[in-house]
View 1 (cartoon, rainbow, N blue to C red):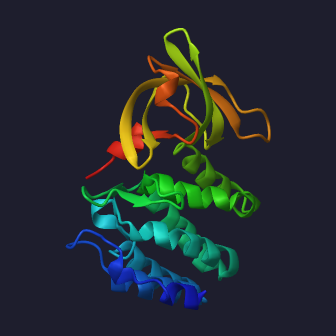
View 2 (tube, rainbow, N blue to C red; view 1 turned 90 degrees about the vertical axis):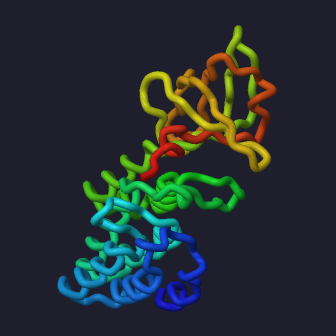
Length: 235
């Protein structure tokens, strides 16, 4: 785990120059991975929360939090119980804090420029089994992550003046009409309104969305929809 932390070039990760402290990210993660008691875990958490991955004083989150998320989950899974509690708390803070303007997105493995909160939520979903096994704390994190949904279009058809988009949902679309952004071929465009036409069946991520006032040509296979609210959350 320490080698994984040390291989990251934390200086190269962008962040607000007056708030982000890359040295605190590296030192804090190392200290948390090695923490064997409450005091050591708290000290490591102070470094990470004071400019390493989030800035508690201003409720800000940095792009470094996305890189740190899988490392924090490793610490939560394999570290001391005190380190686990601190790691989960930091993940919760990172998910609910706001990025600074100019540092709001990172490229995901598919090359899509996703908001920081959505990227962190994706890492949490990848560890669903582990987090569920933690009980209430883990399920609460997953519930928060679920609000940062993602939908990948597989097929689209016209329904009156709207479009029915069939595809794969990660997370959970809130009730009612939602706004979204479309990611396609490196471009981001706004999307006015959509609703859940058919929810995913149990144990399946497949779903259908009704996209109001949209033509099927605007939602070809491979297009990705993300919450517009997430993309607008900045300091």
